[in-house]
Image (tube, rainbow, N blue to C red; front, side, top):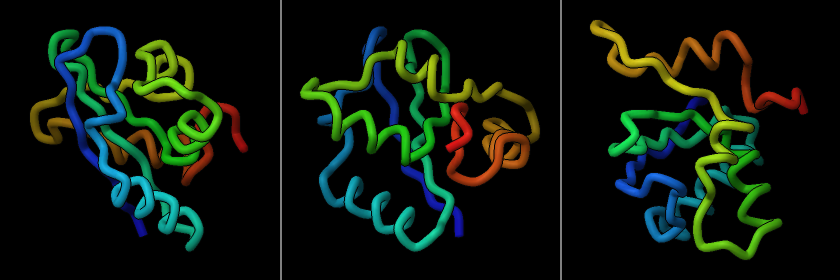
Length: 108
């Protein structure tokens, strides 16, 4: 099972947590708990950059930080840039195939 939340922000330095609702966060947690693959796709529109961030990394961040946003730096460290293409505009499945399930860059 693959599930994701797709979001965008005009902010250049962070993704505001106000852009994602509590029930969406709860859903990501449930998908992980049941062994599904889940992630966020976040588009920083003014930077023309789109990132895939595995839900486990996103949830870990919000549990361990009091900020009201996730810094762009965190997306660069833990996430994956999604290159824009023609036939597959955002080929996020390539990242899933290459790096696997819910195991971001640290392999946990």
